[in-house]
Length: 304
Picture 1 (cartoon, rainbow, N blue to C red):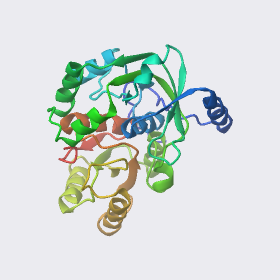
Picture 2 (picture 1 turned 180 degrees about the horizontal axis):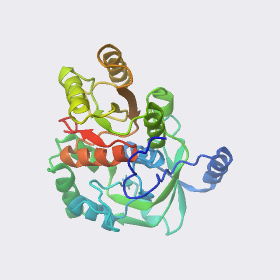
Picture 3 (picture 1 turned 30 degrees about the vertical axis):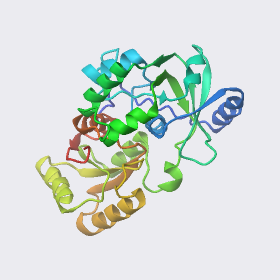
Picture 4 (picture 1 turned 180 degrees about the vertical axis):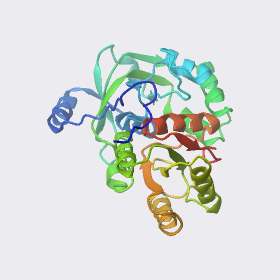
């Protein structure tokens, strides 16, 4: 059995998806009696990443104190390295009425009818001040310019921050729209084990790979004497003008078929909305690819 690198911050992956069918059905039934909140696409993607084990060892959405600490110091409150706050922000002022310990049903904004994607147990609800938002923006993105796509999207999510653990009931649209590409962190680990890889290079992309990307992957394989490369594409929402996921997926698959040797590349994808957060996002990607079992990460300009 292949011994893969340990997950980030723990010895075992903490996946927040409810695997048991009966338990999921029971929670979905119970959600009809809960207050409901249609969350942002970014928060829904965060829920998917938590469910899939990529955000191990987090158990849910951060509170204000932890979000600010992560933004400024890249540390959770229990001193685990984390580069970007994982938050559930909303414009809904009714969120301030939620009570500690209450369970609410989080609705998916990306699927028709807004089905429940997760159940969140409320720990706190805080309103961010303009100064606190500015601190987060400048530390995450290096700017607070509204023309920056990440800044613009962050501000649109709202000022009310809802913290607390979550239990996730589905992977949103990723399993239906990308059935052969979307994979969880445990599934990636299973792929690497099946391939017999121990040293794996991960390459993240939100675009079809061009010649330089191909060469970077092959150089890394050669210089690191790695067993293979995981081509791990962003499947979530992108800024206007970026290449749609289905086209990117097809292009990458054709490139690997033509230009990579057998058993040197695995194609997969993850359910995350691109943040365009530069170096901080590159570090976040390094964290969740460690959780997927990869030992090395190729960092390019794709995070900008």
